[in-house]
Image (cartoon, rainbow, N blue to C red; front, side):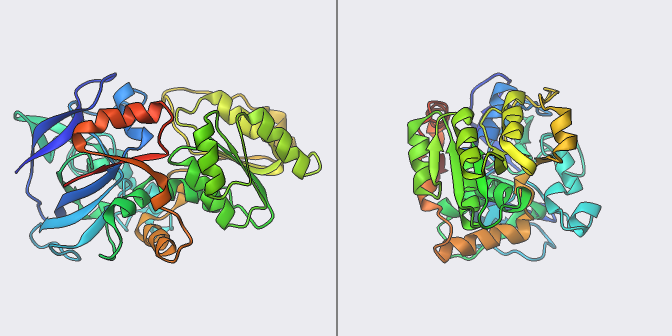
Length: 372
């Protein structure tokens, strides 16, 4: 069928809205009418070229929710009318990682940036003027309709607003899990969250929910510091130097128990600053992305060894999408996780580029595309 979607034709480039053709669902696939999509920084990394992809044009978007319109033949577990949130990390349920409780590391993730179906790198679900169009993470939520594998869809209760539910597909789970799972924040901890955007704000929420006594949010933009204070931070400062001194003041000079790097364009020096800010046996969690070809982190090997510090990467906050996304939505309905407050502004699909300009200007915690 024909649909409208936002693609980048090259990198560096900008998103433009075009008329696309999208396949009907095959066995094991769903066609979904999108309700909402978050404007995550990772899609901007695709546009800038920080994250190279397998084919151009490439249809973006990986944080979305919608309603199932068609179910592929002989496909169990879904029916027309189901409300779903997409997981940008598919889960096959059979590989070593899924079987070991690391669904976020599922082997299907190898194809996230290829743009094609998981089982055939030459087979694409979308096209433009007869030419293949890649799907971001196999889902492309920047499209009014999209066809996806069932491994990428999580069915949710129908009473949860889809424009809020979409946020657990990436930003909420990534930030929350970075604190609760990856940093293993405990009651009484002192935690630094470096960068308060769509990911960092949820690391703040996660650290606060886990019982941290001090949650120090770091961002040069005053608006973001204010939002951090509203969503669980105990302190908000403009630099890591200030945050490090605060943490030492709370810990008799030892340093933070953990520091979580959620900077929109993460550089090696950000990792080095976080590593220097933690105590002996503390944890520095690296969640943010930048130029994925960049190599090298300025940390002292002596601190790594002699102080027994831990440097921990975090993909989707070490969460298991199929279970943890539903847990987060339950926390939301119980009033223990804030989603409404994360959305600074909503946009139409046609205004997607404005949404990213607002993100770069520091105006949004999370912008969301709302479809008709």
